[in-house]
Amino acid sequence: MTNKTLQDIPFSVLDLAPITEGNTAATSFKNSLALAQRTEQLGYNRYWLAEHHNMDSVASSATPVMIGYIAGGTKTIRVGSGGIMLPNHAPLVVAEQFGTLASLYPGRIDLGLGRAPGTDQLTAMALRRGRMETAEDFPEDVQTLQRLFSADNVTSKVRAIPGEGLDIPIWILGSSTDSARLAAHMGLPYAFASHFAPSQFLTAIDIYRRGFRPSQYLEKPYVMACVNVIAADTNEEAQFLSTSFMQLVKGIVTGKRKPLQPPVADAAHLFSDDVQAVIQQMMYYSFIGDAQKVHDGLTKFQQAAHLDEIMVASHIYDPSARIHSYEVLKEAIRL
Image: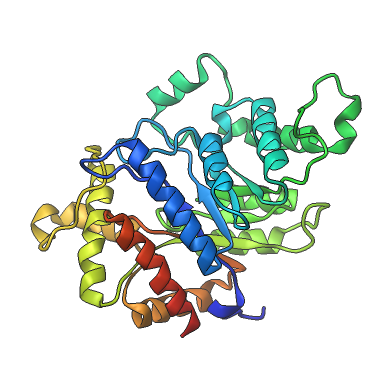
């Protein structure tokens, strides 16, 4: 396997439209558009938005609406879902929504699909309102989507209009070996959530590559991994900015979620040893520092994983510092 360098592969953006302490979702949306426009200028490849529900810090719950907003405010960057949590939705509705997006913004829309609910079970039940879909139905639902997008579906009694006959790339998203096997079996590109679920990452992408079966959609395996990057002009500034992310992860670990908090000068007192250990495990694939430090960390990561593309999430409280993080990352890639 030929190892591509950082300069050989595309870099992309994952955005959860973070709601920051003291601000509203409306502010988050404006910040996301500003980030999308700047990362487009910088040459990033994709801008994906993630579906989550009932979370104080995430405003991207109506993911297709956000995709339309971002695509409408940009010109060339691909925009998509990282991902749509398919058990929450009827495949026909997803096909119509993304068919509409692909009709409005041809050649720019991606459909990343996940099998988890993107929320707690009580909220998942509220979303589904008696629908019985579970993660076990995920492979069949993906196949249903493929059929609805196919031009051959024209004679079916159930059709996606718009959607039918359009080129809308489907990605399988995952954080486990199960998703790797499915993506390999279906011959689809695979995106791994190593930014919050690092433990099975290398095993999963190896299973995907070894088991990959070429399909009409993809001739050879294509692996993208998401990581956390918080980059700044100095290591000290990056560490300071990262304390917002650490507080966010603490809220997830303890079940006491809040909007994204401002950074703090001394974060050590905020975390017990047990919580700190879990945070470090979840943040394993996080690259925090100046351009040189981020370059060195990502280079080792790429040498181990041999990725085709890297997607970056940056949980930073100050929107201007978040934009600058992606600017510094571009410098890091070029080193």
